[in-house]
Image (cartoon, rainbow over the protein chains, first blue to last red):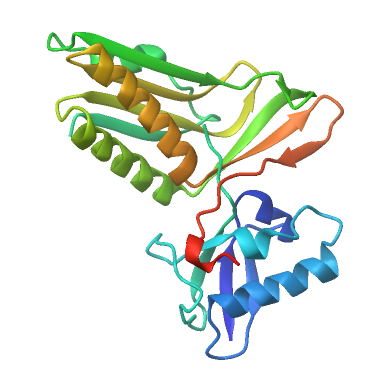
Length: 88
Length: 152
């Protein structure tokens, strides 16, 4: 299955576009998504400062609410990655 | 609710302190407290020329509304609150956030202003990328919104 990951903040390094399509095994959850992102970053972006991102990021559902690691992802689902924040 | 919140796209308009003062103005106010955050020209020894602010628009606005409501419930239900935060590229000197409070008394006005600023920094999905004199740029570290019980 595939989800659409909307990128914010430092995660925008992961794509020229604002959305990254991520392939995952069926019935994957947020923890599986974290693992896939760790793999992508270690393979393609190891020189960036993104190594901690899969561990420190939160993820928002389409309802703009934080979802837990056990949250089951659906095919074509739209998820936002929320790197550590710091406005003001 | 006596609150105005907005994310201001800097390509379209700027944050206005005059607008904020008009919004909070009331004969009931014994105190008005205004905090203006600006982009400064230095951070950790690096010469900064500007900051790009990114935001999850809907969630940021939701968080602003929730923070203002909580501030009123906590300190002064009748307080008038103006909160705007910039989005996009802001050069040095530009206003990045403006918080204005109109309240019956100074203590509440100061407390609400400080409370809102700290809560925005810890709740609102907004990110900063600094741009430096030498052409380099860097996303700044921040506060994780991942549930603490899940962080190993």
